[in-house]
Length: 374
View (tube, rainbow, N blue to C red):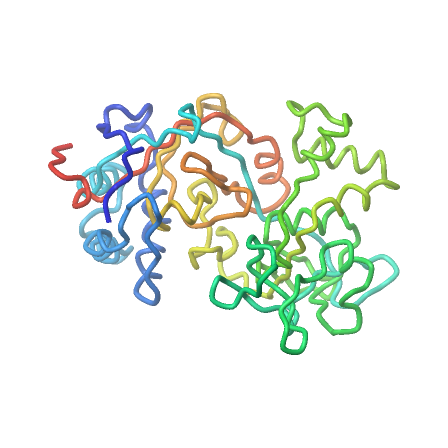
């Protein structure tokens, strides 16, 4: 496997703000992936960052613990770790320009374990008749985009979409994990792929992505912009929510334009400072985990993101080392990323306004960079 010719070799001195970042925070996220791969390796992405080249780097990362100061436990030594093992490359966007970052977060909402007059919007678990499909079992004529389908006898057919499910296609199957009070809250949990639930019985629970009906995602912001309801430049999660609040009779009309429906599974909240376990099978780290195009990139890869117009995280230009630990159906292209902002309303306020131009730099294991002396 060879590195993509898209990559443009750089030095760490070329990365704006590199020396000022908190590399130790990024290392903590990187180290979680280093332990996970002992159970299951990550798949190498199509742009040529070979997972196998991380083996020695992960091995060294696993030696660091609070009880063991070797090889380092401060920011300076963490920066030296990344500089020692990696070489940065710039990744242009598909159009040759700069990349794009958006934000995501883990909502925290009130929920009930049973349906009540107030709590009537369900979050559903994965149905038994939903099956994964690929080129090996895809029947002729089925949309090649679909990665899930419905098993009906000996046939695979397209699964019911959001509108059909919300109108009762799965009623009576006992799939309800919890009940919410607001369908807009439920929709944004679908978009984010996870949530913490403050249950009315006193429990703190978490739901995270399990599967989806398979249809393409269509964001409500795009729909509202095309309908002339919200100018595209003003589309944020906050402006979308405000429009729904002002137009409650049109919520179903807009939300059902997104035919994709998400199913969840319950998960423990083991560390409240971390987010849900995502596609890379490690808990997301607020401000340090990034979702990338999984087909192109390799989970565990460090990315340095330079987004000088993004100041929502800490009131200064966003220049941070992030670790690729998630993906999403809307995250496509070599220089496209979704930044995890954390859990709760404050994180949502950050994530909801992030849509900024950004330069993407991947940190490539030095073994893959022939002749590199950086």
